[in-house]
Length: 272
Image (cartoon, rainbow, N blue to C red; front, side):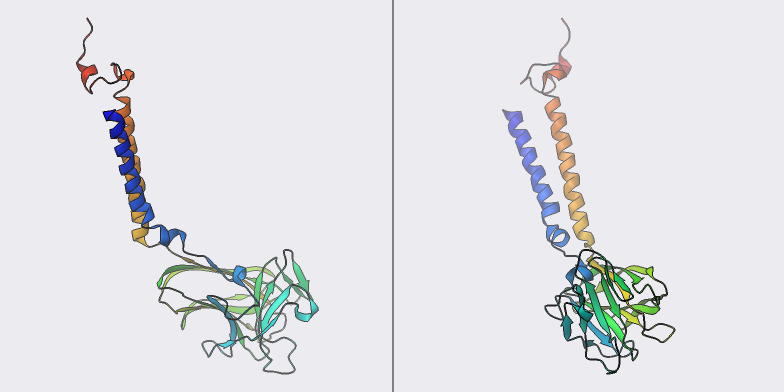
């Protein structure tokens, strides 16, 4: 019974260490959401959570929220957009953010959006369309973004940007239909910091055939202390479990003595 109680005690100690290492760090690791711009898209309101949609008249100028949602733009069910009354009344496509609200490819005119895909389009007066993320908490994050051309006739010819507040993190061009440039980086944000994904008219200066797809995901990065506590908890559990197994083996008949024989008796026994 003594050894059974001892084994139980060691097991409880192991669980306590695991709870200390894993439980303390759990809120930072498991409760942290992944911010996916396409998955979060909604016509309910703008902003929606940490995401907002709008435009700038030039890179780094004032941000204007889109205020007009449409669940079936141009008469196409599932072609969801946020737009703004056109600065140029004669324009047939104002700056906008678009979303495919269906589970299959959605084609309208010269555009094809993938299932649940997100895209944006610059304006006729050179306005940049913007998808903005606002940091809900201070901490370390990672950006994972990719751009694509969604106009198969033009094809798409745009310039794209990623900015942290007023600092440019990335710029490139989308000059073909299909996959385009991508960008990934880690960064630290204060509460209220902004990450902007922007699209402009590109080097040709024309807004025609400029629908540009974007995958934008921002993920919190666990703090080093969280990872350290988790690792220590798992290591402690493994160490105590190994010691408990060795002790159990040494008090069984396989050690050369009957069950219950005090530890070390088997080693002192000699053949008659």
